[in-house]
Image (cartoon, rainbow, N blue to C red):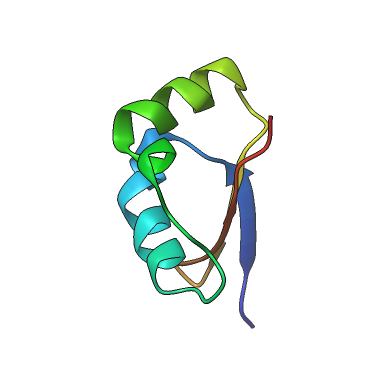
Length: 65
């Protein structure tokens, strides 16, 4: 059985998140998605942004503020 894990996003998730968003249709990345800006965003909105991992693969990520 496959297991889906939802957890708070951290900077450890950054590379996989950007890779996922880069290959997902309809998502546009810009300067706001650069590493330092995402770090500030996650610090300012601690615990609100989430990732979803299925069998060790990142399958979803959402920024919430």
